[in-house]
Length: 479
Ligand code: URP
Ligand code: ZN
Ligand code: ZN
Image (cartoon, rainbow, N blue to C red; front, side):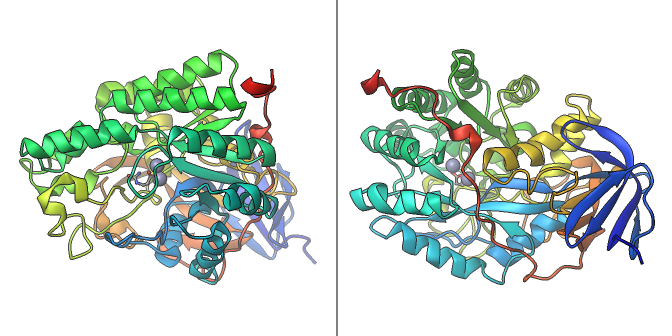
């Protein structure tokens, strides 16, 4: 009788540290052996010519988020996680958002109802805090962190989400006390409002002006402010979706001063530019690329690569935030046509994250394949309290594996996608490297674009405290 339920045979195993020709033996959903030559298992998967890598972990995705009267998202858990596994991912961490005035705990309960039995892959929840009142900071947040919701996001912009400086400081202080990792959306609310009003008054309402309304300086200023607040309160923070040189340099500056400031970037900042928002002659097709911060330009792509290569960024996430393009809920709905202000912010990308980074990074010689694994899987697991269950290929880890075809060339197009959105912003981009098989805890859930898993396969992940969220010294008021 075989000891293995499955053996992945003849592939090249790639982790954040090593690249070795080896077989992988799986039993009970776990990796139990990685060795040069293993005995047969009940099932054998031939991985000759393929890389055997840890399944992608995408720690920044938005699914089924409340719409506040605006357009509804194009993906709930079912379609969003289906898209994720087709793209080689096995774990997502979307956000349970607290609408203002609502209980944070109730928001989490409600979000579980969206996810239960609807997920093709494993998932944890970050929180989004929009109303840091005494009950949230004194009771709900610490209790939720203890329950395995060990990270949360706060916003420095958006009418329904923005926190002022005092609130940011209170929230950071609370995170320090309960050990949560804080993710910060760094764009300055007042500057964006000022720019938006000015542009609208000048009749500049096309989607392109979304990018004009929130230039790099707005992101740089907010990044610096968040870093300063983090220093004052002695709290590690993750600056999410960094778009280019100016904010990247702020993070690097902080890291060089010894502060625990982490950075995340995304495919849109190495593959799209603000010119994409011009659409066809400044028309509404530019709305397909409206996200925040906006895509910049090719010089900023290079700055992002500089940040990736030098370790300023630890994670490469999709910031999958899908909206339809057509229809009453779409990016060109009648209200959105009156001003870029009303175009919903966000683009789909969970299914194309790995291919874009692999192609532009590994194939074009900018990063090693081990760095690719770190940026797309291992570092997410380590930062967000999922290691050593997720994020590597070694005995004891969940058998979350992607078999990667390094030679498969594809042109990204909507027809290949499994998401709910009716377009992909990466349409027409040719990539080399594509997932050929995705395995979740030992079960093959996607193979060559076919979904073989079920929407009940995914399990909720209660996460540990992040070892990266441990404070460094004392807050400024206590030194
Ligand atoms: O445009 C974006 N990224 N929308 C999603 C929400 C966010 O800020 O991450
Ligand atoms: Zn954000
Ligand atoms: Zn986001």
